[in-house]
Length: 178
Image (cartoon, rainbow, N blue to C red):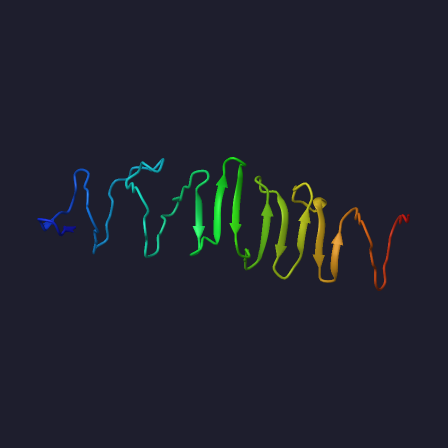
């Protein structure tokens, strides 16, 4: 590391204590921090930065590492903060908020589960879209499934208002009118 400017052009390779730079510092070679102190807050760890940090390239996170944001801190995406992801402590909700359409994409399908891994819904590429009741995730809790010919509804269908049936309609069991 070469420190330039001011009254000295001193070449330094290591610092033993706090260093203060007044003005811009440009580094031409990679900077490696040898300290392995874990970070447990915004004011602890091997590198602590007070103020904003601008990054003009890719940030790579090591395998098994995490990015930790405390409650009510947001991950913001887009030039106009079009997408926000955060945990709101006062309501205990995790929120994904966007001023644009949100698309979930997968090569095979998308599954929505509760916090224990029980299925609430799944959407299979080239196949069925399914909704479950009680989130037990087995076939007995399947309530609605799209098929190649329409929709299968398990158990009871309650319809309010006007219902129109065109073409052939088949009803098995009890039909109540009035």
